[in-house]
Amino acid sequence: MHSKDRSRISFQFLYAIRHPDRVAGYAKRRSRDAYLRMKSPDHVSYYRAVMASDASRSREGAVGSHTHESWLTLGQLQFDYAVSHGVKPDMRMLEIGCGNLRAGRLFIDYLDAGNYYGLDISPDILLAAQDTIADYGLQAKLPHLTLVKDLRLHFLPNGAFDFVHAHSVFSHSPIEVIDECLAHVGRVMAPGGFFDFTFDRTEGTEHQVLHEDFYYRTQTLIALAAKHGLDATFMADWDDTGHAQSKIRVTLGDGRSLEH
Ligand SMILES: C[S@@+](CC[C@H](N)C(=O)[O-])C[C@H]1O[C@@H](n2cnc3c(N)ncnc32)[C@H](O)[C@@H]1O
Image (cartoon, rainbow, N blue to C red):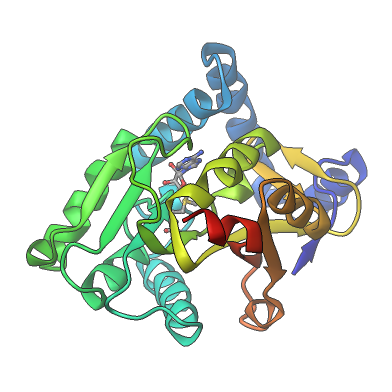
C-alpha cells in the first residue's frame, strides 16, 4: 500500500482538522522526539531511546500494537505469509528487529529447536521478548536473542540463514541503516535463502516523519539491493493482506550465490 507525504504541512493541517482528538498526542510525541534526538548522537541511539520510552508504557504498544488482539493478529499475519511463501521448520531464521516476538513466538514454535535468532537494538524490548518466550512456554525451543548497535552482522557466520525477516523495521530506518543491512545480509544468507522485509511505500517524494517513520519508493530499495549484488522482488500479494506497509523479498544475486 502506498502512502501520502505525511511530512507536508498541508497533509498535517488536513489530518488535524479531521482528527482533532489526535492533535495533543502528536504534539506530545513531537516534543518527546525532539528531546530524545537532541540527546542522541545517531539514529540507532535515538531509536533505542524511543523504544525505551514506548516500552515503559506498553511492550505491545512499543512494537506498534495498541491492543493485545492486534498484537496477536499482526504476528499471525506475518507468520502465515512466510509459511505460505516457503518457510519450513528445518530452516534457520534471522529476525532483524524482532521486538517482543509478536511474530517471533510463532516462528520459534514452528521451527526446529535452536533455529530462531532474533536481534534488536533495544535492550528494553529484548527483555520483553524474554517474557514472551516464558509466557508462551517456548523455552525448550532455545531461541537466541541478541542486542546489536548496528546491522553489520559481523558476529554471525557466513551462509548461516535460510530465512531473514524484518517486519516494520525499515519503516523506522533512514536509508543509511538499510544500506548497511543490505551490504552485510548477503554474507550471512545460505544459498537459496531469502530476506523478506516490509517498508512504508510512497510513489511520490521520499520523506520521513519525526525521524521515526520513513517512506521510500520501491525502486530505491530494489536499486540499493542490486548495489550489493542482491536481487529484490516486490511482493504484490502482501499488499492484498491489507497491511499498511509493502514487502520486498531479497535473494542472493547470481554472483553472490557462487561466493558461498
Ligand atoms: C515496530 S517494531 C516491530 C517488531 C517486530 N518485527 C514485530 O513485527 O513485532 C520495530 C523493531 O525494530 C527494532 N529496530 C529498529 N531499528 C533497528 C535496527 N536498525 N536494527 C535492529 N532493530 C531495529 C526496534 O527496536 C523494534 O523492536
